[in-house]
Image 1 (cartoon, rainbow, N blue to C red):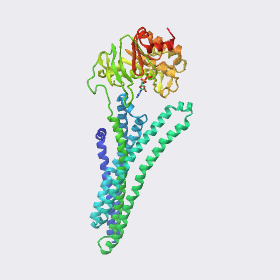
Image 2 (cartoon, helix red, strand yellow):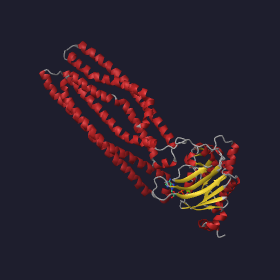
Image 3 (cartoon, rainbow, N blue to C red):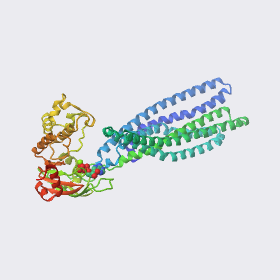
Image 4 (tube, rainbow, N blue to C red):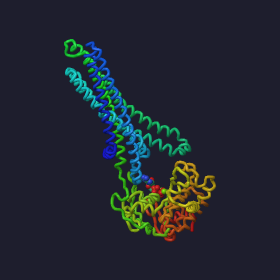
Length: 572
Ligand code: ADP
Ligand code: MG
């Protein structure tokens, strides 16, 4: 509940204000049966019309005040709970943004979305319910008992047994419902993940005609959700009629005993009617409390899931220790015997024993088959992950000590799968540099061989890019993504296999332009023709370092490199 405290502090005045009105409403509610009993016993039964009139007026007044108070607390409750969920979602969003990549990997695909929507909604409903019921129900419940006791002490013979039985029924139902609701939430997660995976791979599903398999997968998750939900609701369904039953037994009891007590003169008719009202109020408030408790059960699961997001390590720059500031220039990036294993993966290291360096002005080629760890290497260089063992240094400073802002200013990456955002092509390019001029935009686009296709469309740079670039071809996306990195004129550029979707001619032109820029660049690729032009080459094979050196050196003494060369270029 730690993360909820700031919200509580932020809303406490509004909360107390709402509670105040709830209190007034409850007092009104409790006074009514009492007034009614006087109206009947002293007015109607005594045949005094003025007394009836007076108490009827008082009752109307109390009703009006109660209704007014209910209006205000409803308004406050809904406004505050909406504000609360809005703030909570925003804070979760910020938190997620600050998480390192491997922390985000821990949350299954769909689960962060469910946490931000469904789980927050549960908390919102709960806080709304709290403000409306939290004070009123227990107060009305206790108040009704006290009022009945002062009205006629004999009513306690009925009330006390009813309350005890109802209390234990509530306790048992809570114990039984909690694990079921927790499970239900997890099923909802699974359903979400399944759907997201399906949508991500929908073309493949169509291409491979795997409709039946996918439907089965979805049905399975869907059925599981239904089963758990039904199970959880069954618990509630079984217990709530029991509560009504016990209270109704109480009402029958007081009617029976009451008729005897009226005969003996120990009770009055108006008192019996008032007592029936009080018992009904007690039933209503107990049901409300039960609902609130059941809601609480659901909310506890949601609360834990939200807390998990807040509890995950945010490695915000500088929070762990004072980051070392370096100049914004790039001198050297060095890997020293670096090992890396993805969190949660039990298998082999994704990288083991990697040592190389790249100095200012150099080009480094990284070559290796798919799955050999090239993208992982780039991610480590960007400090998306921390190495499991070994050291990575930038300008002689451990990468983990470098101020994150400075690091991002020095190093730019063009990722293997280009990620574009909804907006125009210009918006996407300006991500690289907010204040880029038109000339800079054009120059970067030209170097990335993107200018031609951009200008061919009638909107040019203002052409709208759909969600994650759906309306661009793979090659077009890659070129926009390259241009976006170039526009920053980074000190050090990492290109991760980012020309794979281009035709050979275009690819050659892009690469030539990149070489011509004489930037410090890491070319990650599977093409020997690209790496052979680099000053130094790192050869990866299943996460291990098969070689590091110049083209000539590797041709001499690295069998893996030689084999790749022969397979792509032919024998030398
Ligand atoms: P490459 O870029 O050379 O194709 P990667 O660096 O993407 O190779 O992957 C290297 C290895 O690490 C592969 O075996 C891959 O399955 C594994 N891997 C990649 N990303 C993750 C991840 N996020 N979690 C766990 N394992 C991963
Ligand atoms: Mg890769």
